[in-house]
Every structure is written in C-alpha cells, then in structure tokens.
Length: 67
Image 1 (cartoon, helix red, strand yellow):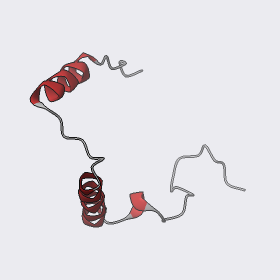
Image 2 (image 1 turned 180 degrees about the horizontal axis):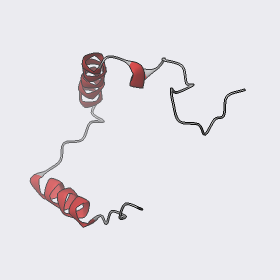
Image 3 (image 1 turned 45 degrees about the vertical axis):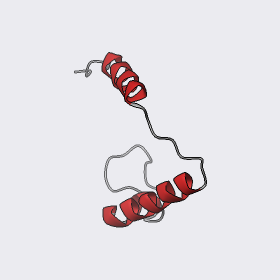
Image 4 (image 1 turned 90 degrees about the horizontal axis):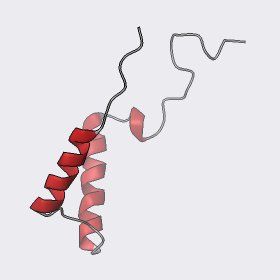
C-alpha cells in the first residue's frame, strides 16, 4: 500500500477541468462568462470597484517562507 504522504506522482485520476488542455479550459470559461452576462447575472467592475479590489489585494500580508 503506497504512503499517501510520500512525494512522487499523484494518485488522483486524470479527469476533470484541471486536467484539461489550458486552451480548452479558457474556451469553456469564456462560454460560461458569455452565458452569465447574457442572462443578466454577470458583473462588470466599475473603475472604482476595480481600484478598491486592487487596493485590498495589495494589503494582503503573505506569510514568510519557513526555512
């Protein structure tokens, strides 16, 4: 029985969105965004909202790397 904590190849299957080709992921995500906006549920940031989001992102404190 392999050790789950051992480094090496992943034991997960190669299925799902994350295992897809990056271009296919982008195409699927783009179609979802178009459908979202077409249904009226999509959101477009105003310049003020985008500025505030960028400010908050810049304030995030990242933990130092443990050596």
